[in-house]
Image 1 (cartoon, rainbow, N blue to C red):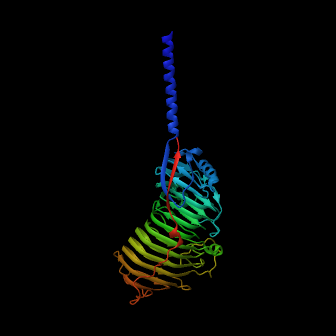
Image 2 (image 1 turned 30 degrees about the horizontal axis):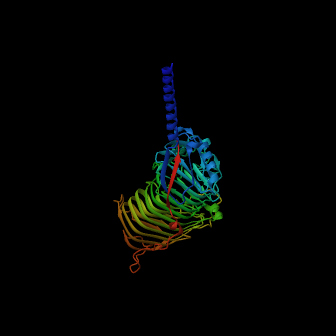
Image 3 (image 1 turned 30 degrees about the vertical axis):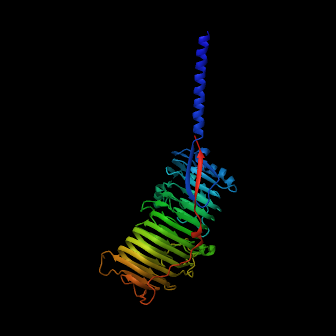
Amino acid sequence: MVLQRMKMLRLSLLILMGILGLRGVECRRAREITSWTYQSTNCRSHTASLTDFGGVGDGQTSNTKAFQAAVEHLSQFSDDGGSQLYVPPGKWLTGCFNLTSHFTLYLHKDAVILGTQDMNEWPLVDPLPSYGRGRDAAGGRYCSLVFGINLTDVVITGDNGTIDGQGEMWWKKFQKKQLKYTRGYLIELMYSDQILISNVTLVNSPSWNIHPVYSSNVIVKGVTILAPVTSKNTDGINPDSSSNVKIEDCYIVSGDDCVAIKSGWDQYGIAFGMPTEHVIIRRLTCISPFSAVIALGSEMSGGIRDVRAEDIVAIHTESGVRIKTAIGRGGYVKDIHVKGMNLHTMKWVFWMTGAYGSHPDDHWDPNAIPVVEGINYRDVVAENVTTAGKLEGLEKSFFKGICISNATIAMAKPKSKKKLPWNCTYVEGTSSSVTPLPCPELPIQEHAPQSCPYPENRLPIDDVEIRECKAMIAHT
């Protein structure tokens, strides 16, 4: 009996040790920590994972409610060091969701946020007041996938995680005229201040990719944007009626302009009266066979001024810098400075037009004449170019103060001997050290400085500090 009891006791101890061992493993798993570093304007005190709110990363389950619940919960920490939502590896299907202030959305390198194909999860929002209607169609517009309004201190970043709009459905419906409302964008932040978007990859947006509008102090840095070059209106980065904007170290393949600077449409933009100004663009690489590297307009009725671009590379892109406007726009495009463009296979290097057309309705003012002046390009190298410059001002408002210097343009073999490298009407300016020889409207200034002016003063957005932050999260 004693021996049998001893065996039973040993067995019980072994079972107990096994249970305790399992509990120990569970406890160790519960204490597993994922940590990472990231660059941000502000570090956060509180971090949560999307899975804490029921998120399922299988690419099929809708996570719209999970994103909404996560942001709502984390918004309580706005005044307590801010918060961060961690999106772990997986494919996270979702409709539109809003961000909050003092907040970071962080994507793991293997995380993919997928825009749902269920149009019911893209609710309608009002047209932008500076446009008067949707860009694609009259009336409202579908919300943007990642959206925010009246926010302060917002960061979207990661280890090059991906936001995929799955835009093919939208492109097809748009081309077939099956949409009653304007397509949503991938990221849109309205009436917001202190925005950083960095180190993420954006693919297949339904329409524009990044749209800061009525916002200030915006940095877009180290972002990759990819869309089929035949996709409609998949602009890369569109600062719109926004000030103090810096775009740098971005790579964009697009079906439309890689960067398009805007400020409202015709009478609606004039009435809203909010310009885009103090914009820096650096180290941008663009591929867009049917559009521009940098476009100014065509919606520029609130005005565009003080844009500085440097170290620009374009490959197989329709035009370098393009100014688009029309009678009815009003507004102005002033003090544009570009230096250091390396362009390969272009239709036009320099293109500006006052006859772009495209009005929101029939109520535009024929007396709203746009002003274009102070346009400076220097240090340009281009090859395999069809036309060096197509500069078309307005008879009622010549485009003035155009300066082009130190530009070497290697022309492709023309299909016709009558094809001229320059086409200029209603423009005034100067040139120096430009090949091929510019049109007479840009006479050579032999005794003038060899370079068009480029501002030497720093803009406040260049002094915004980006620091290295650390974060960690416990999970099973």
